[in-house]
Length: 115
Image (cartoon, rainbow, N blue to C red; front, side, top):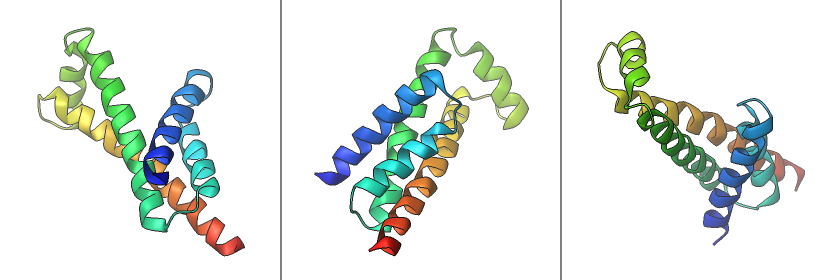
């Protein structure tokens, strides 16, 4: 139950923080949630990763589908050398998930260090 609650809380806090602050506030949200909830390092990493991976993947898909994936086709061709916007959406989710996952892992390690 703590695992699902932490995923939901990380996603909600990250979404709300990203409306008014820079993108990297996802790391702060994941760090704080992992610091509050007492979970192992692996579960904290997975919760942070899944929360932001799902959030950023869904958000980038919705934004990209509003214009028929026109920009995503061009950017995926430039960055990934493949004309597939879904790879770009996947890469976006992976980058955000890794940032939040490592931030949550750091919060979990700090909690165990204090105990």
